[in-house]
Image (tube, rainbow, N blue to C red):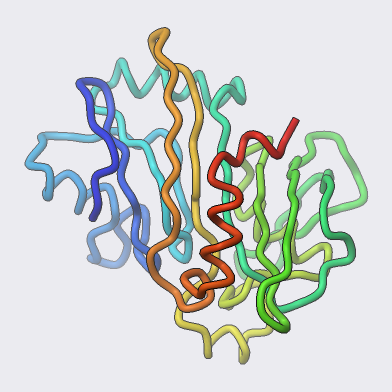
Length: 224
């Protein structure tokens, strides 16, 4: 797996699509594989990505650093930006999605009509090839499956998402088209900004997608 950045406190890696974050059913997960690859005694997870999601993820090198990152995430002080492709026309092309999330069947989630502790998602989008739409998404909260459920709620489930999109169509895709694209934060009084475009999946690396992603190379400028 690709190392994006490393210092004494943390390492930033590019997680491959299709890899479980934690080990399951005797299959080594992302954290275990990263620890072995880097030859370190232990790495500490401070956030996670779904199996279908590729992209940027932070692993802390000490319990102290992990505690600091956990505080930053809880305070919503780490800005996260994702890319997603849908094969459906959304009910709206940009804006906010705010609602509580509740458990649904078989490990899925859904949005409800209440807003007691809402999942908050902001997005813009652009058309690509016929039938494709690219989303730039900024989640303001960190709920499980938040982006996947949010885009489904506006009629634009993510391409290749077997859980939330049309399953038969999703199985024909190379991958689930959700990518953790950028991170921006301050840690120990130092500012960090990282951007890492997706490198696999035909819909992500098409000429049209690459051109649009390049237009969003500083994603924080599109969310005020």
